[in-house]
Amino acid sequence: MYNFFRFAFLAAFISLATSAMAAPHINTIFVAPHQIISLTAGTQVSLSLNEAVDAESVAVGNSLDFTVRSNVTVNGKVVIAAGTIATGWVKNVKKACNGKCAEITITVESVQAVDGQTVNLRSIPHIVKAPCCEGTTTANIGTNLTARVLNDIKINA
Image (cartoon, rainbow, N blue to C red; front, side, top):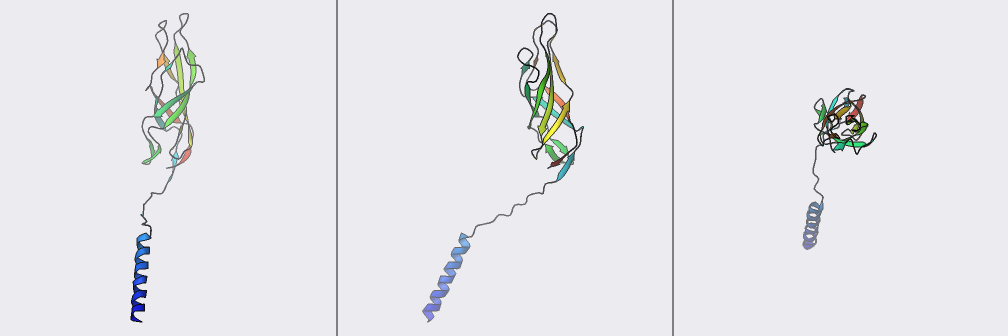
């Protein structure tokens, strides 16, 4: 009978030890809660052009890509992250001919917030001109533009 209890105790001990080792280790990770932030109309967004655009090869309505140059923050929370791609378009093109000056007008239209929402922008049209009668003009990669948030929007940041 002694051996039976000894065997039962040993079996229970091994079973307990094996299940303890097989139990998954759970890491506790603290995740900060998201907060709803109001991004107000008129908030400035700094951008730069991602591609060279020249008056001889673009047309009105061509899509353009821009990159957000620096984080847009509200109350210390990033609502539009630096490096995010924004979209815009060619608003006007004048090619150099018959004494007319070449000119390209570009504008920024929208960008994505940190929660994936589209944020509509308005920008003062950026106009690039060439000296009159001296060929074409180019808006170079890295050309800086400023846009502003078009309307109030709630961002989950």
